[in-house]
Length: 160
Image 1 (tube, rainbow, N blue to C red):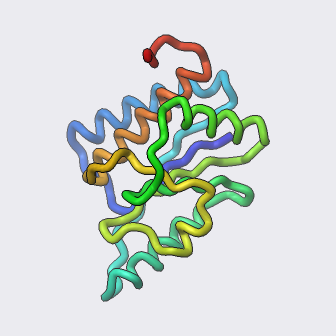
Image 2 (image 1 turned 180 degrees about the vertical axis):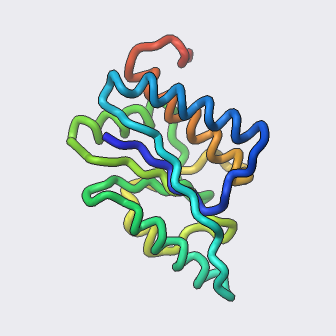
């Protein structure tokens, strides 16, 4: 099963990009033995439309077009549900057991997600109550994907 991170906005070079690459590489290596590929990152420039609603709609179209048929979409959104690392690992395992071809995690642009994208999501989660820059949100999500893989493999990285 493919893991994807769909993100609006380009990651700039620097320490955040290096940390993101580290967690992606760790996830790719550890996830293979469990049946996961990726996470692959797909990123697009912010839409240039004149209003927030139009920008969100344009960005939603782009992200929805990137999904594989049958993919599970999980939106990261400030109004989403708080979940634990164990919860995320269970979501990933359930999707793998159900032969879902892809879990795609969507990180919207500065305006957030369009309602139609949120409506297509099987889950809407958040990385806590605080607002995070999109570059850090990617790193935090990539770390949680890696953590979930280590939970599923029984690796001692995750300690409670």
